[in-house]
Length: 359
Image (cartoon, rainbow, N blue to C red; front, side, top):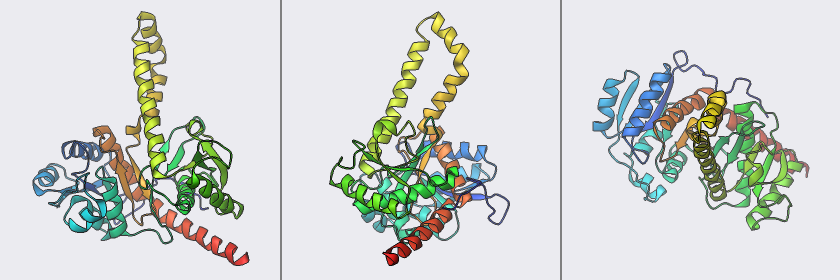
C-alpha cells in the first residue's frame, strides 16, 4: 500500500492552500444556529478555509454577508431525519444535502459536510458523486484513541444490515485509510466479534471471517483474526471491521464510558481539599486525557468509498464539534485522501485479479 508521508497536507487549488467546503446549514438537532456558530469558529481558526453554506436564503444569506470567506448557496428544501433517505434525495433536488453534494461534483467545492440524516447523506453522496469503482457499499469510518496509537473503526453506522463481502471491503478501505492518515504500513485488521475463536459469532461474522482469512492469505488485507470489544480501545488492532449496527453500538458505548469517566473524575477531585490540591498537581494531564476522550475533538467521520470527500457529524453536535468537523472536512479534502483511497483500492483489485487468474 502507498504510504502518505504528509497526512492531511494542504494541497493547492488555484491559490495557495485554499480549501472550499460545502456545508449543510440545516443538518443537526439544533440547526441552523449551532451550525452557523460552528462555521464561524472554523473560519476564524483557519484563514485558508472557505465555506459554501447551503440552506434557506434567509439563513445563509445574512451569515455570508457577515463572513468574508463564506458564500451563500440557497437551498429551500430540507430532508428531515424521519424521511426515507433515497426517496427524499430523489424528490428533494433543492435540499441542502443534495445541493451540497452537487456543488462538490461540479467542482465548486472540494468536500461536503453535514450533521443531518446519515442515510440521506449516504444516498445523496452515492447518487450524485458516485462510489469508488468496485465498492458495493460505502462505510463510515472514525478514529478512536488507544494507548498504542489511534484505531480506525469501520463501519460505524452507514450499513446496519451487511453481507459478508461488504465487511471485506470495509477492511480494505479501513486499511488504506489508516495507511493514508497515520502512515502505518500494513496496519493490522481485526473483525469485531464476541470471541477470538473463528467459530464465534453469528452467520455474518463466521462467513466474513472466512472471507477475510482467505483475503489475508492472498495478501489482499492484513487480517489478524477476531477482536473483542474490550480490546478495541486498548489498540489490539489498527483497524476494526464491523457491520454498521454493532460498530455504532460499540462507538457510542465507548463515548458514553468516556463521559462517565469524566464526570466521575470531576466528582472525585471536588470531594475535599486534598483531592482539589491533587487536581492542581495533575490538572494538565487530566485536561489532556479528557480532550483525548472527547468525541467532539474529532468532530466528524468520513464516508469511505465515495469518490469525493464527505464528512458526517453527530446530529447532537455542539459548536466545538461542528467547528472541528468543518475543519476536518477541509483537511480531508485538501489532503486528497479520497484520491489515495481510490488509487490503492484499484491496486488491490488488480492484485486480486492476478491472484484469481493464478489460482
